[in-house]
Length: 266
Image (tube, rainbow, N blue to C red):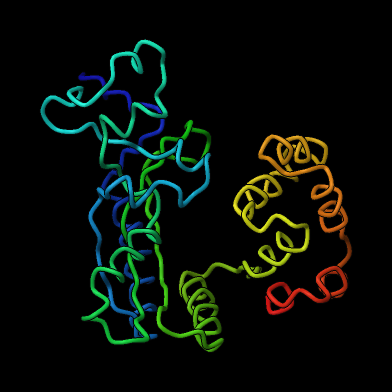
């Protein structure tokens, strides 16, 4: 009897039943997106690295799959960079494109490219694979699908309500009970402004996102490594120490962000 070939770690082998289940889920999500007036688009798997780089923070940039230039891809490379292992400066010389890391940045590029053709507000959805050069772990893959819905050209809170309704409707149709949790980037931006480091918003967000995994002390170490001053970290610490239920946390944040227009708007 022929032996079934082994599947490399970090990849998936979809059989007929798995494909049927996945298509059922995707069809359910598509039907709800369309119910709320969203139009489907697709963007290429490859994007220019100039479009992708710098959008996900330093760690995100490391997880981008970069594609070697066609032909003599070493032609523009400096041999001293190769010998010294200076891959930070070498990579742009040998690679101009990469696989998309998410669907948001390609969508932003799509809007800019077609801005004269789109009627605003524009509601779009995408269901396509994305790639991340991550270390495979249980439940994590280097290739996976994202199902995105976004609205551009309007700042009405009705759009936010619709997106919550979409989430609720999708999971209701799939028979899955969920709890929806909300955040607002303006709160994070307000905190960054409040501690005097607005330009470090991404660094702060990436570091504090790990607090449940590595603890406060390690987060403070990482913030120092990312260039935050001791004074900024000291001003951030009371925010990280907020406890209690949602109402208590919101009231505490309002006091901390008093006078900060961006944070209070969030």
